[in-house]
Length: 274
Image (cartoon, rainbow, N blue to C red; front, side, top):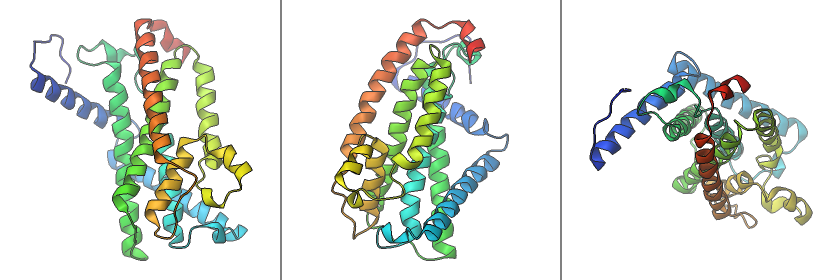
């Protein structure tokens, strides 16, 4: 996979070489969670199922099911929980990717961009596979699922993943300079999104003063839009997937500039500060 010497390559050959390197790095990032890749995926599915069970019980005990969109209640929960997990896991994967001072960067073809890309793709792979398996089990064991616009709803999942990667890239660029602060910010952001993501309510039901507390969050917009695509009788009026997409684009640009600057000033002593 890694070579000590490099020969000049054409455009297609270089692209294939990078694709192969990313593939092996994705496999490594998936297996990093557990030696057995199947166990890593099973643990992720179990976490998703536990989230669904916990929120189902909470909504039922507190009598909050009436606040949900009219339709399949579990699909309502899934549109929130899957996108939330995809977002925070993408952020965590990118933030935890190999930095410029990592020993892996000593291998000739390896660089931080490939490390970041493989971590992001690995997180998406696990989440998509978990989504397919959970929906298939629900469809077969309980009731046939019906999603009004499945392609558009899946697109919202991709935007949730993209914005998570983008914000993770910004934090990754800051991590060598402020490791403790970045770790704290990441934890606070992930915990705050338990509520701020809007997975427990829909934007159309919020009064204007409460809407202002949540509409800064791109994940809030993506989840609300996903429910608009999943249910025929819900039309989101106060959210926009374009907002989330452009926030992600801006964050990627800032993160890439920060990562380039950080890479230029990389020091082996940074490993001791993590």
